[in-house]
Image (tube, rainbow, N blue to C red):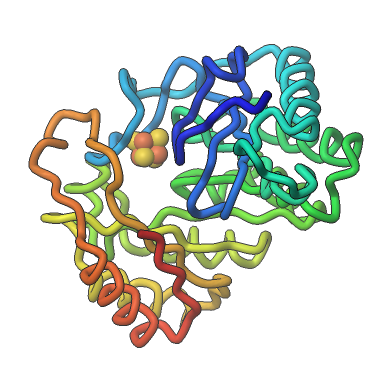
Length: 279
Ligand code: SF4
């Protein structure tokens, strides 16, 4: 019998695992098998909209890679057996496993085993004969994009036809300080975007939320990065769906559907890129 997953609900308990979880993802367009390299909820940023309960500043330590490999093997097997399919669904479960996504409860590129995790995901995808149907995705804040270890991992991801979703939620240093509670200089963000997109296929991922978002400033930053040599695939634009669990999160309000559509149109016009809007 299928277990019901709610959309975007990282349901570790339903999968009975510690490092691998199934989620119905709007942006993936179906079932996403998540890998969490930050079980201690460590991140170098503290985004005001972050949904990680108990987020801590810092970097994760090592995980047990044998456990990761075993859990991913088991969860992919269960997905192929239809465990996460909706009741009455008759499609081949293989078609519904849209991606294996390294994201989790913190910034994954901080993990000392980030590249090992990519290698495991590549190996398990092949073992389950999912190469033709299941993408490999890394969701990142981009802060470690220029580090040699991250570059090597992105190269491995690119060689496996994988992609990254690179967070760009603000176009100015003040905007980033407000939304990420971290100061990141303008030139550094532009260089990180240029560098990442030249290594691995890259979608820009943008959260629009009141009162912080300035779509004009984000469009300006993306234009500047493209002029400097960045070649993103496009922008994934989404809004707040669940309450923030961070201090200060209570002041956030979601964009309406019409506001998100208008923001998408404005970003499209400003950047000339494909912009996918997720309500
Ligand atoms: S980068 Fe991601 S995990 Fe880190 S605080 Fe921001 S939303 Fe949360």
